Image (cartoon, rainbow, N blue to C red; front, side, top):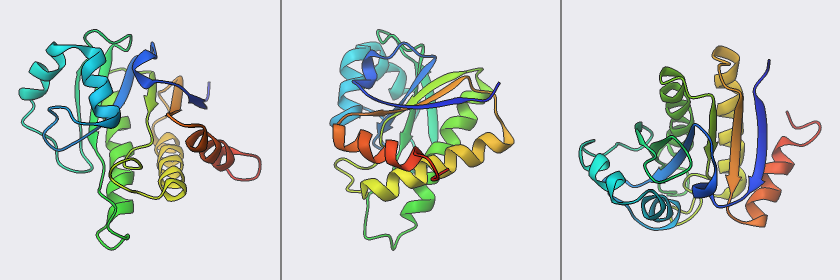
Length: 172
């Protein structure tokens, strides 16, 4: 059965899936936006688990338990800071999605939700980020369709509208 791709506007910390993806910073020790919300909702054991991971490079992904979250796991990935597109930002963002999916597949994760990585404080243009995310996910599924559901969890109505448009008729 093919993977269900869906979009929703929600607080990612409330989703009861196998895994949610954290748009983390390199330290993995918490921050603002999605990262701060996930750390707060997961409780202090998440911080302790992240301390054991020795950080994370941009584009890479690491796994922890979800602790107090409804999600069983958290996949932490570090998106690129937008610098005008001159420093390999699109490839690094694609690596976030690709590496997160590869990690999920290795751990038997079948349902996963991504936030809009790098589009907040890191300044990545939303339309380019959404297109990169969707292209990367669809390409990954061509090689390894082991997922039941992949969700793009949008914080704002604007984000949701962009993702829905990108997934719309004639776009994929």
